[in-house]
Length: 261
Length: 261
DNA sequence: CAAGTATGTTCCATTATTTGGAACTATGAT
DNA sequence: ATCATAGTTCCAAATAATGGAACATACTTG
Image (cartoon, rainbow over all chains, first blue to last red; front, side):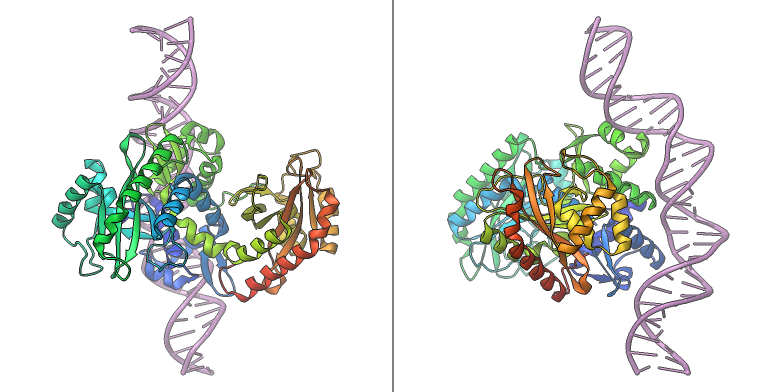
């Protein structure tokens, strides 16, 4: 259900809190964190002290707020460079976006959720919810469904179990059976769609990226709005999309590192 | 001596280990980590399990190696945007690099070490050690010395104490007294130099960046190679360098966030 | 391919750290 | 000046971390 179960003792809890602070996306006050976290006041306080000491958080004395620290920024940036598909895929998704003049998203999966890893917008495109580093549910996104459909059976079941099936729009697939039916289709065609299932007015066409040993390591999507194109129009992008996904996959298989998970 | 002292219990130790893994810059084996960390085998093992469970590390079963995890990578964008000067300074250092056609580095200080935050190279410049996210000692870099020279006395002593005075080249300042003498000069002129003290053949001219309350929040440097310019030639960049540092400082003072530490 | 060596994992009694309710202090609003 | 809200400290009890040593597994080599 929840992303990282709290069975990892002190360290797990501290990281939970770190995630919460970062999740706010702005400097946060102590009391907000007490409300948001499942831990009692004294415990939260102790963790914040530790994390601040460690440079993972920064405490602004004047404003009494906590924000991500420089050490976290440094570690995270490193991780981005060495542990995600982003640096490797960048040239390809730039080329794709340029070729078709549409927004392209790159995503990977973490703990049953979609993580948006990178994004290229052509010139001045519209803004979507997907910012790099953002999490989204897998059941209602093109990239999420594309990845689930090609997961090995064991992982697939785990990930499906992890879905909340929360409704974001009237089109959201909110039943497990609906999702499974669609996954079957995707597994046949190699293409997944998001028909305004996550954001009203936003549609996408997505394809999985396969790394060494034909393991799904990520997904790629072309995103547009209903203003700009009908859902079926997206189909004309599928050759370019599949080609780019294959290019990235090949690159990832060849390069030992950065590692794709 | 070491960056984050181990006085923060379990969480501190786990983060130490995380830093060590990330520091390798490549997937690492268990035994390498046991050697590198001060903790006993069983303890390292337990931490690695926890961190992997938490998604902060990724364990490649086939290769038996640990690498940064997706969860850590996910934190990158947020942390980088809100915790560093990078987003705010970007336009200014781009303008500077373009104006003078040289490489420009932006750095901040973390636990007595220099963290390179951003870097702009003109067209196809040469490569230096400084990649964004990279750590470097403060005693042998222009940006490091520029920051130390303007730290308040308390912090200054702490940071000087934290230096290892490791020799990287024959020109490296390897004695505390040498460093102090140079800091005095820097404090007078507002300009610091790196005369091949970190990398053979690389020289730079650096200036501190002051935020609200005239606190040093970072430093800026123009980097060139001895191939391209003599050390004294760098002086002709100093007006542009100082101007840009001032612009960034003003911007940082005005904008409440991103926070400069 | 068997014996040897290096590497990785598990166990568990001991030890040290975390935990969190409650009392306390600082801050800020009226 | 008074009250309310936010943040910090305390400390005995509860729990989790510790790490030496035994065990298991993967590699190496004669």
